[in-house]
Image (cartoon, rainbow, N blue to C red; front, side, top):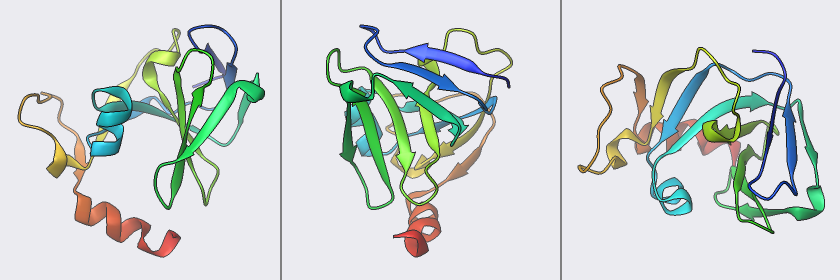
Length: 138
C-alpha cells in the first residue's frame, strides 16, 4: 500500500508511513490488552515512518524486544516498535484511508480471553511460539 498519513487525537503528532502492509495483525497479550483496553489491531509499517512532533512522543519499553510510543498530550497510542529491526506496528484506527485490509495473524492466541472471539480464519501464534521466536533477539 502506498504512503498513508495519520495523527494523534490532538494533532501534536503526525505520522507518515511509506509502506503499510494490508494484512493486519491482532495481539491478545496482557500488555496489549492493558495498554488499549482491548486486543491490539495493528498494521505493519516497516521502517519508513516519519514522525512530526517527536517531542510529544513518549516511549515505554514494554518488553525486551520492543517499545510502545504514545502522545504525551492526548495519550493516543501511536506505535509498537521493534528494538532489533526498528520496524513499526501501528494501530489500524490511526489511519483513515486504508483499504483492502485483511486480518492475517493473531498473536498470543492462547491468552485470548473467553469473552470475545473472531470469525476470521487467520494464522495464530501461542505464547510459547512467540517466546521461542524472540529468544535469540533479546
